[in-house]
Length: 243
Image (cartoon, rainbow, N blue to C red):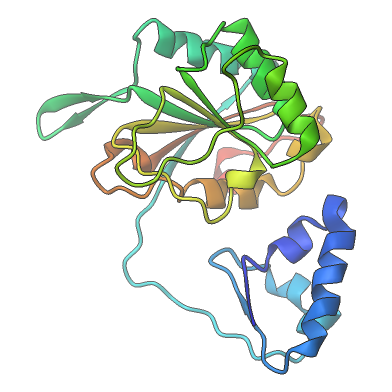
C-alpha cells in the first residue's frame, strides 16, 4: 500500500482527525506500507506520530529545481482584493511578461481560496456568467446547493484535461491543493487567505508549496510566479523569515 501526500495525516488533523484515524486503522492489515510525499512533515513531527515510529525514512535530493517566486501582499480585506483581481481581468488589464522580447499576457487566472462561500460571493459581486467561471470545490450536497443558488447554468466544475480549454476564471478550494494538474498556457495563480476563516488559517505554508506546483506546462511563463494575498492577526513575519 502506498499512502501519497502523507503529510496531510498531520496537516488535516484539526478538522479531519476521524478520517485520518480510520485510514491509519485500515492500514494495519497491510504488511508493507510506503508513506510518500513531495512535501514531507518536519522530522520533529514524524517522530511524534506512533504510526511512523521506527519506519525507515528516505529523503530524495533533487539536483535541478525550479523556483517559484511568491509575490505577497498584505491586505486588511483579502476578499475585496479577490474582487479587484477579477475586475482587473474583466476590463482586460492582464498580467504581462516579456518573453524573448515579446509581451505575453495572462488572460486566465486560477484563484485558490478555502471557503466556498467566499468564492460564491466574489462571483456574485463581479456578476460573472457560467461561461466565464469554473468552480472546483469538494463534492458534497451542501456545495452543490450553494452553487445552484448562483442561478441557471452554474455547476461544480472539474479541472480541464491537457488540451482542453480553460475558462478565464477558475476558483478552487483545498480539494485542488495537492496532486491536481492544470495545463493552461497562460494562467496566473492567486492565493487568497482570510485569517478570519478558521479553515484558511491552518498550515498555509504547506498549502503554498503545494499550490506553487499546480501549473504543469513549461510553455506557461506565468507558472513560476504566485501571488499570495493575506491578512494577519496579532503576528506577522518579516520577509527573511517568510522566504
